[in-house]
Length: 67
Image (cartoon, rainbow, N blue to C red; front, side, top):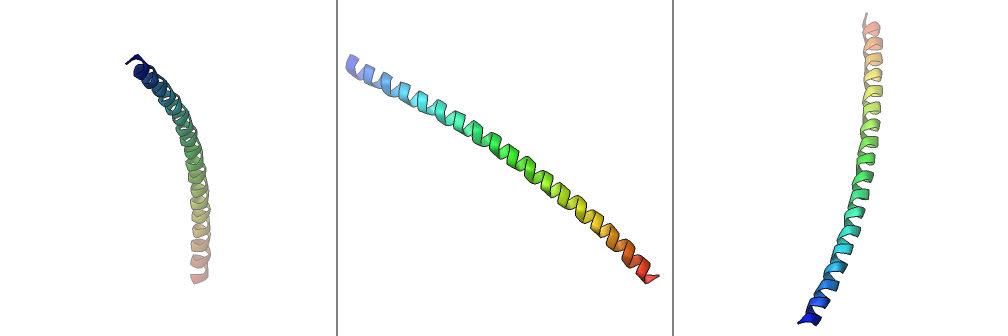
């Protein structure tokens, strides 16, 4: 019985160590994901802003062409 107990204890220690390793990996992946999401939002914001500027220029030039 004690032998089985020792075996289960060692197995439990291994599982806890593996769990901690995976938790750290998940945390790093989450941080990377957050950074990529932030960069994507910045690019989309810049694209949206530059498109709005282009649209305003197009409206001004087409309006002046119609006069």
